[in-house]
Every structure is written in C-alpha cells, then in structure tokens.
Length: 150
Image (cartoon, rainbow, N blue to C red):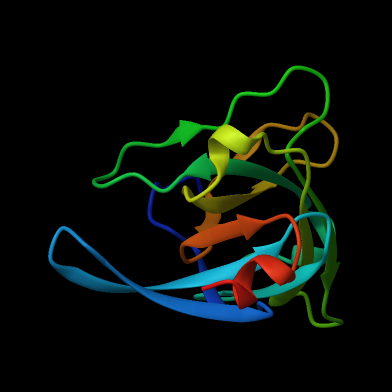
C-alpha cells in the first residue's frame, strides 16, 4: 500500500438541504447548511485507482472549520458527534458516504464545521496514508424552521 502523504481521495459532490453565502475575513464562502440528525451525502473518488475502496474501512471525524491547516476535533464525551455509512461502488474507485451530525450543544450554534473521512485498514484500524478527504464548510441547525427566520 502506498503510504505517501498526498491526499488520494477527492470530494466529488456534497448534498445539503440549504446553502448560505457568508463573508469571512473578506472572502465569500459557500456554507452547506444541514439539519441535526438528518442525513446528507458526500461522494468521494480515488484520484488514481491504486486501492480497492471495497477493502477499506472508513472513519469520520467532526472538525471545526478553522483557517489554515490546523485540524481541531470537536470534543465529545460519549456519543461521537458524526456518524457515517459508507457504500463503495462495484469497481472500488469511489464511495458514497451518508453522514449525520448528531449531538451538538447550543454553544456550537453559528459555528462552521468540516467532516474528515479517513480510510483505515479494516483489521488494525490504522489510517491508510493519504486516504482521506474533507467536506466543504458545514453549518448545523437543529430544525429547518431556523432558516425561515432569516
């Protein structure tokens, strides 16, 4: 297996019920708005087909959307704040992942997040070098009515 640090997965698509344009530090950014506990999907594909995604376990991590390359994981006590269900295609070069963002407190309101998907060895759970991707920025709301207030 290739253990280089180059990102080997790319985000092909990401669904969300809503999208918002926000300006952060003078830059306009599209934010995907998702509803807590409601599924949304991403599709990832290999940049080059050097591994069969049917033979890979996937893990998801909820991160704060920070400037720069810093990855700061959202803390949790018992329940992981994001869950996923991965379904690779037959040829093993792309994977659809259904994500749900779970328990977030009111202090997380109006914050932006990203989900990191990482491929792992199915037995050892060791990360496979470079086999990861990040979603675009996400904002989580608890109910769809929150959008109508704006």
